[in-house]
Image (cartoon, rainbow, N blue to C red):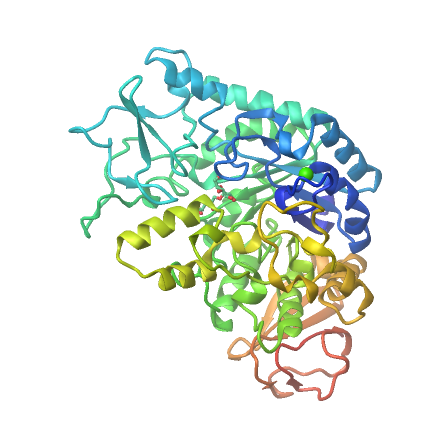
Amino acid sequence: MANWWKEAVAYQIYPRSFKDSNGDGIGDLNGITEKLDYLEDLGIDLIWICPMYKSPNDDNGYDISDYQQIMAEFGTMEDFDRLLAGVHERGMRLIIDLVVNHTSDEHPWFLESRSSRDNPKRDWYIWRDGRNGAEPNNWEGIFKGSAWEFDPLTEQYFLHLFTCRQPDLNWENHDMRAAVYDMMRWWLDKGIDGFRIDAIAHMKKEPRLADVPNPDKLRYAPSMKSHLNYDGLLDYVDDMSRNVLKHYDIVTVGEMNGLFADRAEEWVGEHRNRLSMVFQFEHVRLWEPEEGLRPEPAVLKKIFTAWQEALEGKGWNALYVENHDLTRITSRWGDTEHHWRESATCIAALYFLMQGTPFIYQGQEIGMTNTRFGGIEDFDDVSAKNMWRELAAQGRSEEEIIAFLTNTGRDNSRTPMQWNTWPNAGFSDGEPWFQVNANYEMINVATQQQDPNSVLNFYRALIQLRRQERTLIYGRYALELPQHEQIYAYRRELAEDTFLVLCNMSSKAANWSEIELSLKGAHCVLGNYPQVDEDYRLHAWETRVYRF
Ligand code: TEU
Ligand code: CA
């Protein structure tokens, strides 16, 4: 079934790091509005902005203290309305982050909830008695340490899967749900075009909150089993859909760690009235703690193909390789040392032309890379700091910890957007809240706009191509050269029309034979090398798109 959001190309903005409009060093809503022409010109149809709500910023806005106010550092509600109007005037759409697994500990709901054991909102969060003077169970939080925090006022513990300043909402409580639904309707009635639903995978908790198995006798044990895609979670989604989502023509994308292709249809099946798409995690966490490493093409083929096939004719994929929680893709999968431009563009073609709605994370379109950290003072992310503490306690050296966080840390993708060669990469006239990547004079928007062979212009070409060709939007995906160790190849087919996408995912040349995959009757419509030298041979990180 055709849908506007299936035809869209989406762009994710991390407001703090996108564009500072008033010189205080912090990106803001007016900064985004300033750059709408840039996004329109790039060919973007749909913008997702990360949380811009009132927040004490314990987790950069993912700890919300008022869902209906704008963070002062980012501007005002009038600025938001202007941004939304600017997006709509350009024929684009805007979705916002719905963070309702938890709130900030400064949210009035939590202030009430913690005020006494018999407060009417007590049950809006998850409170339990301690056990022998310690936490109610042995769960470790996602950001390390216990998932529980003691509150001396009422002498009980509250659950927090993320930081101790992000108490989890209790989705079993229907009054709480109703309040969340009111808030969602308020935004939808304002005219936003949908939500990216944060940490939706964690909303349902194992009802008994029992200890998790702990064979290694850790103080706190990994607790995902008890709250990641836990049985019954879809009942919450159905309730949210029935009460809010299905009454609007919107797009929804659930952040769904813990979902695998075999059950994807239950979440995004066309007739299920649940979510439009999910961000699955299989290809980005392949699977901790080596998540910073480059995967073999065989692994990627298996994962992507499973998702493509599972949803063919039944549902729709969200396609992405970067976001604000991940390292930069060219650093992670590519070769920034010898083939920065080629690997950035090759990876772009690889994921972008599959069946689904492609998302581009700010800076990905210019091939931004991971940054360099000297010491703990260079990190901002609360999860990196917690991880530092944890690894130090395990006796790991400072060098080892820095190496680990350099390969995995979320701060890599949160350095300011690199606009031009001016001081601070043109991000801000003031002192940026977070250090700009030292390579900005080489990697930036202005320079790449002048260069027809830039990563930016390759993204632009990809977007144009997808926009013109229905086959690249709705066509069926089929894997080619399944056994090839370097080349990822796939076809897209709609009726008589066929495209072939070839990506050499390695820093060495790669060959294949005409018998394995023939190019007869094909012509190259896009590539990342100046010309096609030899038909059955790809240079390092070469990509070509053929049409038959
Ligand atoms: O991330 C949540 C998130 O990444 C988990 O869903 C995931 O299962 C976990 O990290 C696996 O290790 C979102 C936001 O994207 C992130 O920036 C926030 O810090 C987090 O929620 C808390 O709101
Ligand atoms: Ca600012």
